[in-house]
Image: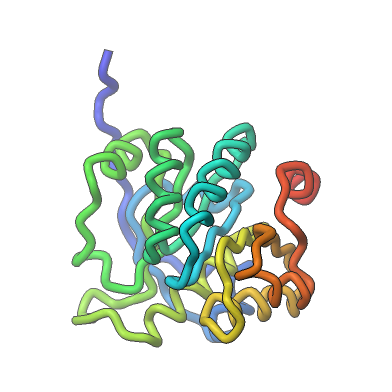
Length: 209
């Protein structure tokens, strides 16, 4: 039997306290659609630079299949190609998903899969951009990624070449003593040298307990 669609909640909220130190340290508002209670559970943040190498896609897919046993939600911007691939995998697994936008909420058109998760109260869409925001800017993208890092209990870095925005974000998370994990791959050597831990199911499980 197909469940009746839930009433999807919409509104605004203050940036959650756990994200404030990453989110420019200023009081701000977020616009949301979906189930706010997802912010109360454990969240694994997923980030990846646009620059990747082909075998990383397969390695990421295998690792996300391992993470399927975790009883957590996943938060991301789901914007770079590798992040988009991850979102597709997580949607097939029917995981709980938090989506952070770099554009206004009223310009976001969810896919059928995400709409279904919203109806099941298994998804939350957040935007720091006001309804009047007209375009995606570099600053809006940076703030989106800061929000992902702030909301996550642990950050999973898939691809962070040195000097990239993802590398700088992961560095800032490490400096704030929040757990950062990175796939073992030459593209992540620099962030691993900065203090990120080699990603494994066991390490992430232990951190989230």
